[in-house]
Length: 277
Image 1 (cartoon, helix red, strand yellow):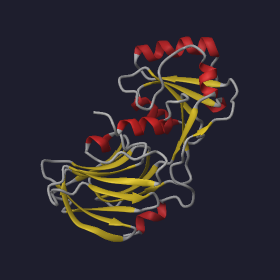
Image 2 (tube, helix red, strand yellow):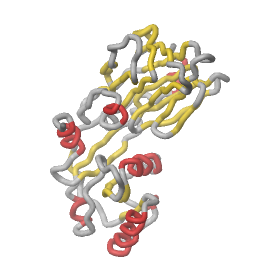
Image 3 (cartoon, rainbow, N blue to C red):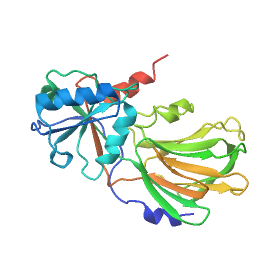
Image 4 (tube, rainbow, N blue to C red):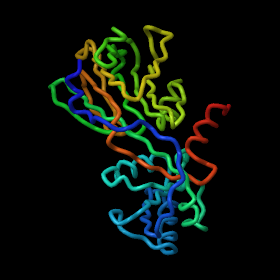
């Protein structure tokens, strides 16, 4: 079951530990979500610190919530410009606290989290291939009231002949505190070179939660009884419906960088999440 993997990238490294950033210049680009408070903050910050086009920026300052941070990372994926987020949304796990003072100093002292996204190759019922990148996770979800039936292979070897479930997902360490956590999957330290494969409401085997995989693993899902039990595949917010097969692996050639205030690194946030109530 390797034919989809010729579309996946080769070479590179898994998620890396935090490192201090080198001092950067003053060229900042400000982007904001549609929320009024985010738009107003963007206008004030741009007037105070200056604003350059995205393609000229050394750092992009994203104002919004976690969803907007993911959107900005996707938007800047080709340039791989570091992103410094400030929370002007409802959820801010991936964002720094909002403050308009000493922004350049905060950015220069920030710690970086470098992650690699997943690449999904989904094959639909008409044998068309759809490729997309996911920063958080690739999830398979049933489309109707019927449970999904999935066969799971790792590196070409069948590991589970039939999983009856609402769905399943493969997530990065950065995505392990998102949908994966809601599905009772494990929280993964950012520097760990592993991926999580998590079942969503497994019916049979009922107690199977999933597995931890090396970051180099190639995961294949085959949809069994696809006509009767249709399944969609979603890479972050990119959805393909009526899929029959999905291949997932880490894109080792793409590195994405998020900046976090000193002492509040993403590694620390993920560690603290494991001890929260």
